[in-house]
Image (cartoon, rainbow over all chains, first blue to last red; front, side, top):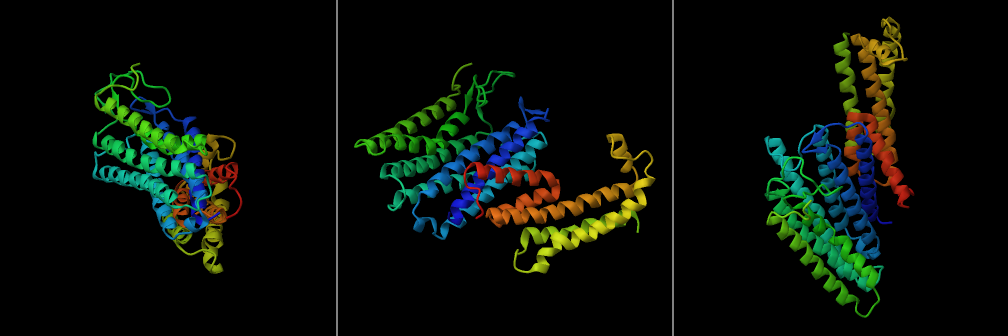
Amino acid sequence: MTYSARQLWLLTALSTAMMAVGLIWAMFETRQFQETLVWVKPFKFALSLAVFFATLALAFDRLSDGEQGKTKWPIVIAVMASAFWLEMLYISAQAAQGTASHFAVDTPFHSVMYSLMGLGAVCLVLGAGLIGWAMLRDSAAKLHEDLRLGIGVGFILSTVLTLITAFTLGGNGGHFVGTPPVGAAVIPFFGWSGSVGDLRPSHFFALHAMQAVPLLAWMVQGRASARAWIIGGSLGYTALTLALFAQALMGLPLMRL
Amino acid sequence: MSADDLFGLASAAVLPGWLILILAPRGHWVWLDRIPALIIPFGLSALYTGLILAHFARAEGGGFGSIAQVRALFASDYGLLAGWVHYLAFDLMIGAVMAGQMDKMGLSRLSQAPLLALIFLFGPLGAFLIWAAQGSLRLLGKGGAA
């Protein structure tokens, strides 16, 4: 395994370890922030990052040895590792103090950290986009041509859609478009609002284009119509994500509960 | 020396060890590797030995059997100091051991730094993270040495 591939698997393993920390934390925690136990947010971010890095590692493993050995990758992955630690440590530290991490701008320190988290998140998704771009260009990659197209398109699409939805989310000052009543129903596990607009569903769908499109490509690879499926599926997925985004911006919940 | 002086001395003594673990090249100079792994923990263990022998039995109602007994051990400044030196010495020694394990995992020094800092601040929390990462790496089928 190349050095860079190993770092991506290690980041996957560290994210999983952070999930374990969250579950153990859950056994002892009683404090809530905005009606949710404080360990939940670090756990959700650890889960999301574990899926993110596992997806990147699986794809990176299939790049040709020549591509994997390029000098840019250790630098790209070091930037992503820095972003990973910044996000995970700050979110966990703030949660352990029972307070906000995102949207917290009450002190200069919190304000700077919130900006840095935004920068870190941009670095993470741009890293995914770079791996997608490399996949599209690497004709010697160790996988089917159709899957290569699906991974390349899926990763780049995920980067673009995530930047759009996450920047809007960040600039919105909170998840919600509207004000949910106290104790209002939320969608189980995800915690998305069932009463007002919530920008997180579209952010979720944007991010997971990087699994959805490659999965579709994997299912149709080898068929004569594979490319049409991948392009059509990507367009449909983009439309769905943007529709959820528009729905939230109009102040409408994903599902009214 | 007063308990406060010894506290300051012991706390200052571990800092070069942690700086070496986090920042210095590793595996090139044996004497440099041994500063955090052996020399500083050895010195602190000597200090602990003296403190615990002179002060353990003085604690009224002290023992290992209940929270109340352990609290009694820590009731005096010297008892508390001995406990603190115990933390400092063992956390640094474990930090050196875990640094070696992270090298074997092939983890970049960049990602080792926050994990070592976590051991410095919250000993077992950092060790738990590294062991859990080793375990999940094995579950992913990527557990072999780099």
